[in-house]
Image (cartoon, rainbow, N blue to C red; front, side, top):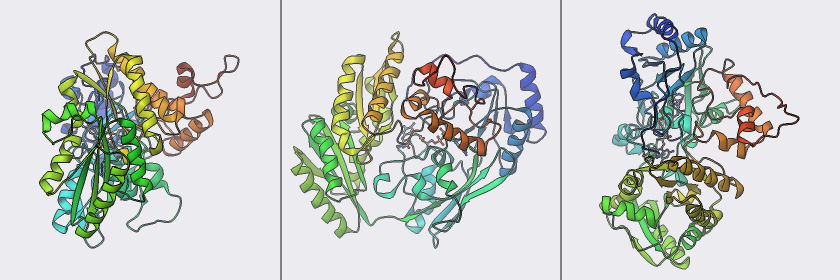
Amino acid sequence: MHTAAAATAAPGFTLTRQQAVVAALHAVLPPRCVLSAAEDTRPYECDGLAAYRQLPMIVTLPDTEDQVLAILRVCREMNVPIVPRGAGTGLSGGALPIADGVVLSTARLNRIVRVDAYARIAVVQPGVRNLAISEAAAPHALYYAPDPSSQIACSIGGNVAENSGGVHCLKYGLTVHNVLRVRVATLDGEIIELGGEALDSPGLDLLAVFIGSEGMLGIVTEVTVKLIPRPATARVIMASFGDVVTGGNAVANVIAAGIIPAGLEMMDQTSSRMVEPFVKAGYDTDAAAILLCEADGTHEEVAEEIARMTAVLEGAGAIAIAVSSTEAERLKFWSGRKNAFPAAGRISPDYYCMDGTIPRKKLAEVLTGIAAMETTHGLRCANVFHAGDGNLHPLILFDANQPGEFARAEAFGADILALCVAVGGTITGEHGVGMEKINSMCVQFTRAELDAFFAVKRAFDPHGLLNPDKAIPTLNRCAEFGRMHVTAGRLPFANLPRF
Ligand SMILES: Cc1cc2nc3c(=O)[nH]c(=O)nc-3n(C[C@H](O)[C@H](O)[C@H](O)COP(=O)(O)OP(=O)(O)OC[C@H]3O[C@@H](n4cnc5c(N)ncnc54)[C@H](O)[C@@H]3O)c2cc1C
């Protein structure tokens, strides 16, 4: 995440056009559901990637699914692009407005429809916060497993659109593994249901296609999630390492030993030093890297797994090991990890959070590569990440007030993603492509693959109005970025529709 204030792009619409669309929306929505004055739409000009800003033409705040359909109909008839928005915590610019477009916020669709403890499911509207689902399920000793660090604020609709992960997704799976059904409003004005309340549903697995589609295929209006029993207990090991290579290899060793910890996270020294004065979690700030490895289950299971993980970590070269002995201590160990992003603000005016995924066995190699890039780009980088999933979150530290530093941070980030691809990984783990990584898509995918992605988009959104120009780059864009082969000045299919 970048926290510097950047200039907001000028409005990209005429007053007449805005007035016409507002009038059409007022015909189908109460006035309080339509915002068009700049002072009202300003809070929607960016998501968590605040470096990219754009004032939208209009913001809509529907109260009901019927109103969502009505907004989509108006936009389709008037050819207005639509940007869905949940809580706006996304880190890749997925909810960044389009200048002549409508932001469709799900903030008011925030009802927990039902919690069925017998079926172990919850049915919720898209604007419900991630953590609120577990809070609603708590009286039944159940919870919703995927736990992004932003879970206090982010919405389940945004989680579905980004296929969000979190500390406990190594053992319990990502959003895609924990959502049974979504209800979707399509641009054609239909409500479709993908998946069902059973563990499998007939036909093509369009639920998996939809989850992670970044608001480009339809508007989620309801989600059915799995709930699982809260484990009887959990304990976490904090292991210190003298260098990041040994720490990275220890991660691979834990998994190779046949253990799937409930969480397996790594923080390098820059991260532990930035966070420790802030949260006082008891981190070993002399260590080059620390690993947090959690076991959960019955008391016997946890005791056994802690013993096995301790042996593997010691064998892998850990120089110190501490194990939480109480629930308060476990939460203290995690508090530093969970607060790492905000703590970055203590040591740097701005930071840029990258998100790439690599095969676990490449962790040491990639961390070494990132350290070398710090010198090349002249910027520091803190690494705090979901090590067990191979999901990196390098935080590139910079000062936007220094001329050229943000451009250097962007170049640094692009180089990290290219390295992830080069070692057999991918350019995103959980934050999505959005606007931020659209050029990196040209690095990872071939023309044929990008065309296949567009084909899926066209099947759901033939008009190309849902979150256009995000997530999938046009061939023209890749050509400009220098990653698409152009023959004799001609690019096949260069004039693909706007999306
Ligand atoms: C401090 C911090 C920590 C974070 N930690 C994590 C983490 O551990 N793991 C992780 O995965 N992410 C993390 N994130 C990123 C972010 O919280 C997630 O991507 C989250 O899922 C976004 O949810 P949101 O409701 O804020 O969505 P938004 O940011 O509003 O939107 C995200 C995308 O979803 C689309 N969208 C939103 N609602 C709908 C809908 N109803 N229908 C269709 N499309 C929709 C938008 O168009 C956009 O493309 C973190 C962010 C912050 C700021």
